[in-house]
Image (cartoon, rainbow, N blue to C red; front, side, top):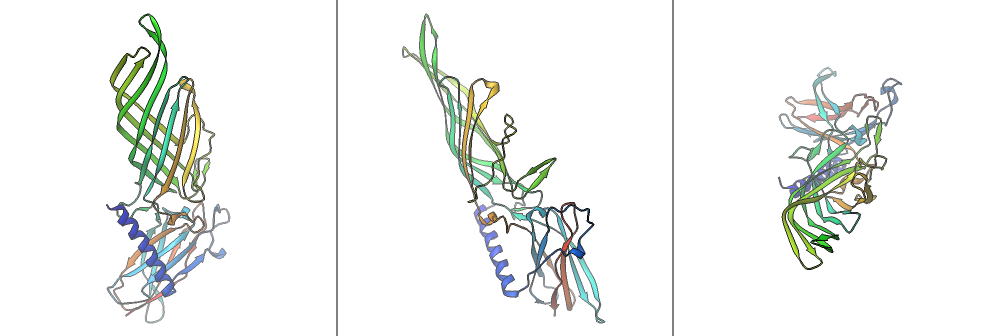
Length: 347
């Protein structure tokens, strides 16, 4: 799939939907009224609201009607809403025609791409580092529409990494009957670049922990097999081919520092950060990492306006006056909610 074309189609869909809503005046938003709320003991994490757009307002039989809308807040992604269609009978009574269960989706950036540097320093002159560019690509989405339909997060896999790995060291040791200084250099060929990234586009609860909105976690592994060259003080060179090496980075979680807070996106929408930590089991080794990752699509970033969405097509088979409404059931996190009825004339 051409990801750039997919992103372009997504932007055009959003723009067209906004123009249609403005031109037709067909967007009807309604927060849940108190009289429609559930039992008082229901946990009220937030008050949801929903919009309904129907296009066109006047249709013909056997031609589909587009029904779509947005649901706030974004935490409802993955939940279902119910769309009701009724037709007015000759005597004036509204008769149910169909019910449809629609899932709430979310568009996430297709990729996060940027720079990553990881260094591991040893107790002597040892230094291992990997510096380069990485790309994480969305994977827990519909492959044709890049829509997220479950959970409060988007997951990505590392699909590309280009960079440079170096390993240098030095010290002294006996060579023959003499103590000599030596230096080590390493040049390798990548055999594995892998990793994962998870971005929470909504606040989530996992067990007893509350994970804040826009927090993230990621890993990166760069394994290599290359040539190790040891140069002695007397000029002797020893070459050891086929040596495996590499570095790994954990942006979060950090098992050795569980109290470390999760990093969160900067106001501009970047994943930017750095850390330095000591690897206790490996006496004296210190790891440091720096990263700057940019999203492929900045449309998502407005937290206050961030929402889920749904869409559906309905094809009336009879003429008459129809009305459409969408609603969401009460859950442990929110009250029930529904939109107003929206009428459509079918000729």
